[in-house]
Image 1 (cartoon, rainbow, N blue to C red):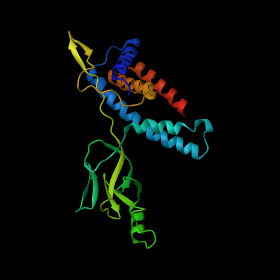
Image 2 (cartoon, rainbow, N blue to C red):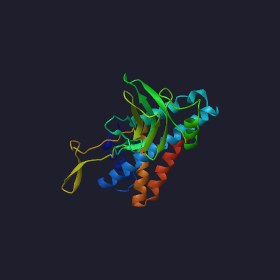
Image 3 (tube, one colour):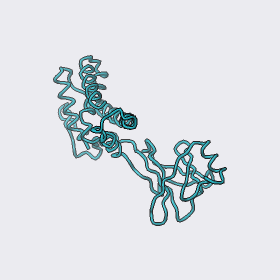
Image 4 (tube, rainbow, N blue to C red):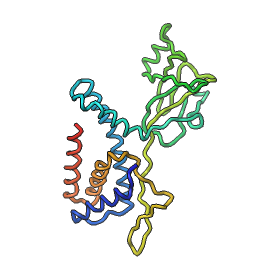
Length: 242
């Protein structure tokens, strides 16, 4: 995790260095949430981009660990469901997730009585019809498939005890929050507040996070200098990763 107070102090220092003054804690918290979510979304793009380069042999062997490093940054947010929040509706024949933190699907699994897992392949509607109508590739407990309908899933063959379905997914990051108390008109950090929330990104993304927040600060105070500095640093970091 990245300390929200450390990021807050760094952002303030950079704004003061450029004579741009302060940023209100409420705005900082909003910009922090936007920045963290933006970085997470971009990680998926970077991961796919690097996989494509490696598959096309457009990058050297020394870069082989970069996709693994990006995947590690993403998997901080990976979760799996339990029977309590991944429930089956017998009327619709759908498994649905009842939580409110779903962001992206990783995959579905079929669990047996010993909790051993079999991957459930998610297929398109046309592939599903071909498989169901096939006399050779009909879905089985050994080779199950599923169709996705919104955030719900219809699994084939129909699952019966002692089997169970499990969903693995990327959850939404928790909203970062720099908590404070007001002392003589000054906002003083309050780390003991129950609603304080640090960033959940790995420390390796610290610089990128600060620059993202500075970009939003620059837009908010309409200062071209802040925008230019933040943009230049972000472009420099992107070039180093490309």
